[in-house]
Image (cartoon, rainbow, N blue to C red):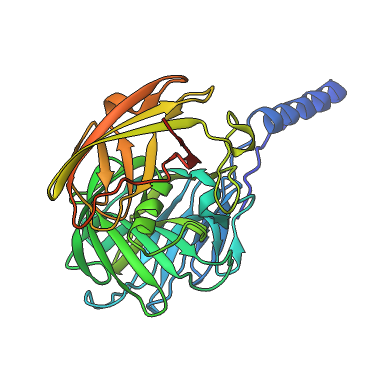
Length: 384
């Protein structure tokens, strides 16, 4: 990395030497303090070269699947791929994963990170991304979210969540398609499979997404609901970048942000600032209309806390044999087991003392029962 330095014009003349020298000093001081240029971009061509950007994220070249040269240039807010030689077969692994991350990856931990963090202590993990894509390459643009039963800071984690923001060329995720899911207000094609030592759950966008702000925990909770992680596991890193198979020069992460909001207590309650000690700040009433083999449920959620609840998510577990067939005033996913109801755009906020209602229809087998253990954004609710 080279630091650019300002240069002052030389003052000439035999008279007024002292005043000229003082003026020169003042000019230099003014330029240094008022107009000091930013540091130059850093280019990494070493296979596993890294550098830090924004004082809190790590950019990594991460070339592991090819011996051909790859270089990335770290910018103020992200990175761009400046050289991407070579190729690998499109029916196999990519040649690299140039990326930027928050958290810990193979013993490298980003400055000031809160990760690893236990899932049941995380209230939200907001993240945002802006990409630049190219057309003369084969690649995907993907987030990697890593989960493990232990707070490990090295090696391969147990479960990998991949969010494919774009794919170009004849490539596909690990495993096979298992349906679709609505997560974060978007519909995704879902793939599930294994990568040797870890499980992989992939969410593939039906069309390219060049930029988005979302909550990483929405995807984590969907993964937990599908049985590929548990609430007492740990989020170890959040990564954004590209997997190129052929070429890739010009791809860029223009900007990236990732934060993790914690405050819960391992083992159950997740207190928030307006809910000291982890006591309940919500109440839920659950009314049903049941007939042979089917039912409807009307759910009323009340915010009993002193602060508004934005982007609400109500988690609960359906009794065995029950399956949701449709819902209204909320998105409820998946259809069985541990499910999460997410507010729509018109009812995403619950004011202090306020309430909202949503409902769903479903089927059941055996004896009918009602769910228990409702949690609103991680906080246990009482029965109303």
